Length: 281
Ligand SMILES: C[S@@+](CC[C@H](N)C(=O)[O-])C[C@H]1O[C@@H](n2cnc3c(N)ncnc32)[C@H](O)[C@@H]1O
Image 1 (spheres, rainbow, N blue to C red):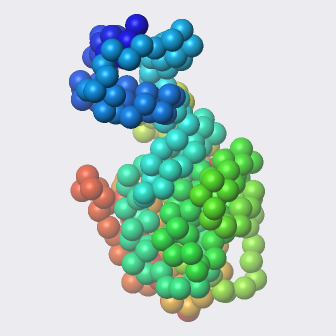
Image 2 (image 1 turned 45 degrees about the horizontal axis):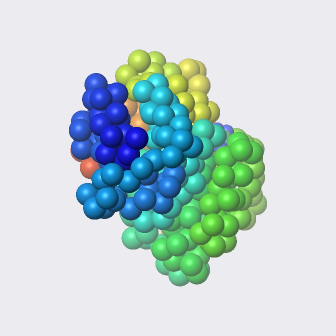
């Protein structure tokens, strides 16, 4: 089979799940990632033959996509804030709204800042910040050893120095108030919201990266805020990606914890998705 015939096979098998342009995008992405074929090959050399090994690789990918397996886990990479991030099923696939959180934080970052990224996962936030300003010191923390191993690979590939720590944020301690900025996209899906989630997320992304305990929808924010209260310098800032359903609870907790200048920001879908607060004293 040639690459054009294989594209027809993808279109035929995936039309019920994706728009035509999405299928073509996925197919080109696979050709590029598996065989380094440029997207123009379909137009310029549509009769390029695929050997048996190439065909079986594409067939395997197609069978996974039909079962809703995320394309990013098949290719093993995704783009985040202009950097290429390695991902596997041990880490959340970075989301566009998190890029917006990064952009917002960048507006407050000055040279030589000391920054912590709590619940770092693939390390995407920490790495995007470090790439943007190499003078800053970054520490990324996650409870998952497997996630930190992905984050380490990412920092090696991108040649960006970050201190990676395997640690439960519930147990991090510091006796210094020396951090300039803390950022986090913690797990924030309340378990009853799972009915609204796509199988692509629910079945394949790590639940430890997604869900809060049933007993407490703002469980992870409590630890982020308490750590920020202890370890941010006066005037230091906390940036959090949030679940729009629990804004009041998070805002109240910030107020009670002596944070001021609390500002909410909407994402590209118009949802209140980020919050920024400043340590008051
Ligand atoms: C929503 S993901 C965010 C990953 C990445 N920062 C991003 O924005 O794509 C949440 C991360 O929190 C980590 N996590 C869950 N519970 C934790 C805990 N108690 N302490 C530290 N990290 C935790 C998970 O392993 C996961 O990597």
